[in-house]
Amino acid sequence: KTIPRTEGVSTTDLVGRFLGTGTSRAFLGTARIQRDFSDGLRAPKPDERVVYVAGAWDLFHPGHSKFLEACRACGDYLLVGVHGDECVKERRHRLPLMNLQERVLSVLACRHVDDVLIDAPLNITPELLSTFRVSTVCHGGTAPPGAGAKARKVASPSPLNSSMLAA
Figure 1 (cartoon, rainbow, N blue to C red):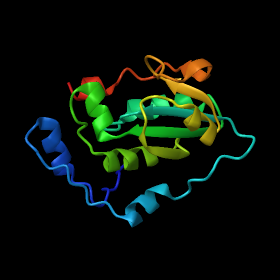
Figure 2: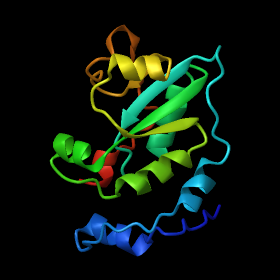
Figure 3: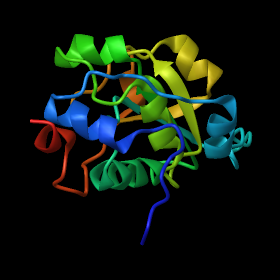
C-alpha cells in the first residue's frame, strides 16, 4: 500500500534529523492541513466511556498504532494527548525528532484515535479528567501522576517501540 506524502512535511528533513545531520525543525503546516487530518473528529456522546492516553508519539510507527488500538478497546472514545517538545525534552533529555505539529498530525491520522489533546500536560489534573469526562487513563509503563484509580496499564501488543528506532 502506498501512503501519500503529507504536504508540508519533508521526509528528507525527518531522515536528516534521525541521522543527526539535519538541523531544521521547520514544519510548513497550515490550518487547512490540520483540518484535513481532523476530518471526521467528533465530541464524545454523553454515554460513551472516554479513554485518555498521552505520550510523545515521536516517529509514529505500527507499535504506536497497536498500542492505541489496545487503549481504544478500554472504552468507547479515545482521546490522545501529545506532549509538547519541551515536555518531551524534560523527560527524555532530548527534543523529539518530529516537532509537536508533525506528531499531532501523525496521531490524528491513526484510525483508532477520536481526538487529540495538543501540548498535553505530563501530570493528569482533576480539571483534565472532568473537562474531558475521562473514565480511564491508559499507560504503557508507570501510571502518570494524578491518574489515581482511573489508571489502567495496557501492554503493547507489539515488540516494536520508539527506543528501538531512535537509539
